[in-house]
Image (cartoon, rainbow, N blue to C red; front, side, top):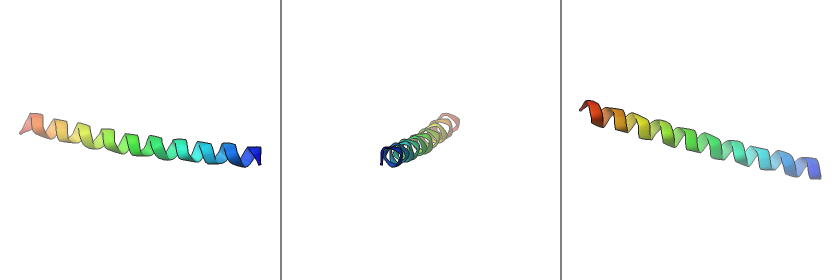
Length: 37
């Protein structure tokens, strides 16, 4: 049970990291586009 809980926690953390990375990438892309245009 403890092991499963840890795995679930890790999965959630990874999902959060992935979302953050996507947001950061999009934000940077928009910033670069704005700077260029």
